[in-house]
Length: 147
Image 1 (spheres, rainbow, N blue to C red):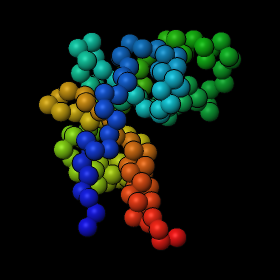
Image 2 (image 1 turned 180 degrees about the vertical axis):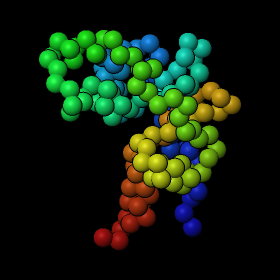
Image 3 (image 1 turned 120 degrees about the vertical axis):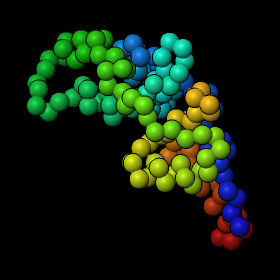
Image 4 (image 1 turned 135 degrees about the vertical axis):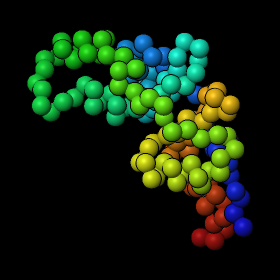
């Protein structure tokens, strides 16, 4: 019988976050440095208030209906903030949530990640990649010596 994982078993603990007032340029730099596609957004007290994804940034920057010059893109990167394009009050899970339930939520909503909160405090993030990596690992272990 397969092991029943919880979100705590698969999540990235203590994820990097971004503040509400961070300009999009900072969001993009942080995502590139961390090699991630989403960042939890926190207020000044460190409480989770949203999540911003690379898709949110792209949608804020690229309208097929508006032609802009490069300097205008640069101005947007400095003037638009995380708060201006994040998803507020994101769907969250707890560390004790069964991992399969988190996977169901990710699939049904087509999310790439879910913030993990414990008593209203951000403690981690679980991504589709986290779940797929565990699946791959389990499948490899289960198939050792059979190929």
